[in-house]
Amino acid sequence: MTSNAYQSLLFGIEEVRHLQQANPTPRGGLPQRPNVIRAINRASVVLLCSHLERYLRALNEEAIEATNRSPIPNVGIPIGVKLLHSRTAIDEIAERQWDNRRDVLERFVETDGWLWGTVQRSDLDHERLLQWMKSLSPGRALRMFAMWGVPDVFSQITRQPHTRSRMWLRLQELVDKRNDIAHGQVSAQATYQDIRGYITEVRLFCERVDRVLSRALAQHLNGLRPW
Image 1 (spheres, rainbow, N blue to C red):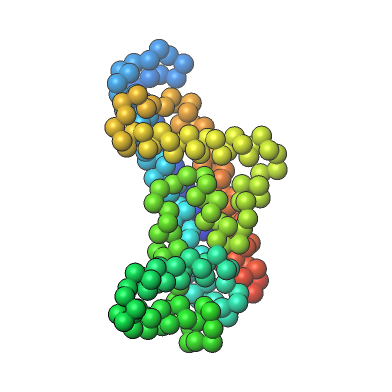
Image 2: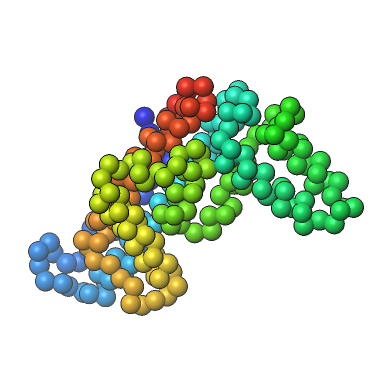
């Protein structure tokens, strides 16, 4: 089984492939309408990167939903999740004057107290956990999975260093080109072969991390794999 997030990603990848089918250059032929080709490839970069980022956020959301459904005690929740979930509330407390902290302290006990003591359980909020991820990068993906108790996820999904390096570099290249395009750099472009390579790495990365996170969650959820 795979997560719903992964199934949505596959639909997104098909969307990018449909866009590539609008490429006016015949296979093996000379370039035709280069401005159209350039626009299609730039759009494909932005679209694919957006689907990858959405996958990671949706995957985190599914992991939180599975955790909220589980009757596990707070000790079964990864420490990274507990710390990041409480960070927002603690930061809000710290920003208040000492004599104006009553309401935020009460809210912290209500929403996060159960993570640290014997307080009535509440639900985790998935949006809190990725507030730090303002944009996508392989390093931020690494941090997200580490939060769930998966250290160095790239090492866990690849056997050979050269495969790991290629995946990291291709994903970083995709993100960098998306950022350049989004900031209006007219020189940022990609070839048809670039797009094919990005699709391959994105699908491989997401397929493998999907399984890794499912196994990691099973360890926290008393052996029950969420997908």
